[in-house]
Length: 484
Image 1 (cartoon, rainbow, N blue to C red):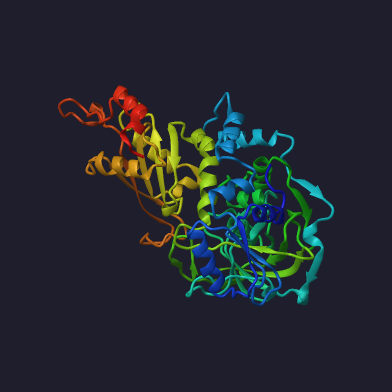
Image 2 (cartoon, rainbow, N blue to C red):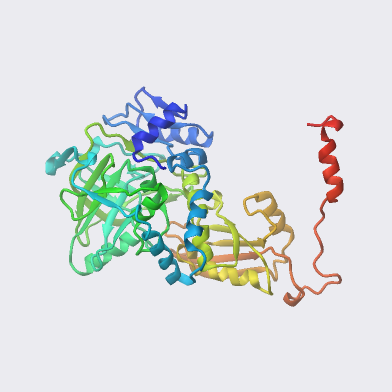
């Protein structure tokens, strides 16, 4: 079972020797980011900075920085445990399309132990500060890269709800600290919380917002998961961690937050109140430019008596985004197969920012099967943002990039096997020549069929492979050869 609190997980990591306490004073301006980035890229431990300049709060970093820690946080021995569990719930019938996806999550909701549970009191409200007592300067925010536009909270779990339907959303967005009571909400064009804000603004209403820090690991993970807008992230978090998430009513806004959070910010967004936000060194590895985004006034801060904060460093991969993205890739394979049942397996390389590139294997059955799969992926929820799709045969391990490169570099006639289209791209995509849409490509690296126009004598050639009997004999005699 997953850890129920961040601090319980940190304690377990320290017991395992996988957490280091940094007791000397460190500066959240560049220094924390530089330390964390070096440790993460070296595959090092989680970090607990106990003496952050300007704040009395310890700061936990690189908590999910390896697959081992990510799995441990969720109480798993492999990512397949969750994907197999999801797949089992979807059988024997596999519903089709987006309606089927919602029906599938409805089945998850029928599992009695996973819906969130409301409680009347919570550790996250042991201390309550309101009005002029609020000072965000006491809560450590990171200025990670030299040209960042200020200090940012990178792991604040943002809660909103649809003004029309009342359906809540939990999302993870960067948050720029403008001053002691104001935060910039970087809500990208495709995000549900942005839609909630726009609905409220059209109605001339304020939008309540609550931001929770230091949440239970399964909740933090769920905030990153690309769920359809009408699926409750807390339902999914309960499913992942194997028990209900306890929620408590906020003090000043009509929202609920995790009872075991460390710090919670509450406030209202006034219609049309915008401030310039950024630049920010983002997970793309480049700075995203300054743009106007909604500015949230914080009216109330609640916290534990001895709170700690959790944040992450994003930038050029690899970063802590890697294990979070890998968890999503594995967990959502059964659900992606609902929409595109042709898929055998897929891989979203961290070097592609996960959403920019997808390597997909299929059991090819007919001409242009690969192209059919490409277009299906471009129509599948947030997979629509994928810029490059490489389709390979089922006998190719999509997680072996050397094998994939061999197929894609050598199995392709780019005059015939390259599909180029235009469509939506990520808000942060700097490569498109205009914002929000651009060019995409699909590479058909599968074996080509005569019906696809491959009519050379003998048809598509066979791959070289060892003689099975000889390979078995060599394996059996390997020690005799004196080789390691």
